[in-house]
Image (cartoon, rainbow, N blue to C red; front, side, top):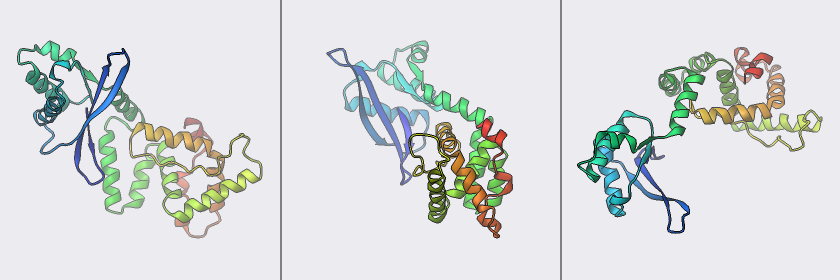
Length: 247
């Protein structure tokens, strides 16, 4: 199970079941997308999870539970398993609690990319955005090195339809002049902005930027003739050859 916030700011619990059917085939089914009311305490989450298990009448078929690696989920599953079996031992609860590898990997990758306190870094960026502190946010991301510079460049390109269209025009010009040596056209590919500090979206941003490196360099060069500084990529955000190698 996992918690998710919907676009209209509702807390939703998603519960999946993974099982072997009578033919010996592995199956996965979505059991519920249930609105999570109240505080997200372990006990409250356990109540919602238990209600879903009761609804599907699978109390006796629950083996292990996979969830994010947070202490709230430890508490949740302690309550949940005791509702299923009041006599269960703490050691058995621990053995049947599987920590989501994807979540662990995300924490490790985020720490590697953005430092130990990635949440504080993300919060400060959000606050800068809400207060309209554009220069401060640029410096904030720039402090993270090549990844932060790339974030600022991509954000600049995607900040308006006109900038995105101009970037695409530059890409087509580069392709027409034969600077691309790949078989497949990349001119129509957009640059991808990472979703704050989510490691996989940062990976996708970097991967796409490397494919569009020639276009990005040409775009930055084309803007250098602009008299208005706001229409140019800030000099502090321009990626050096060494920055590209790091990426």
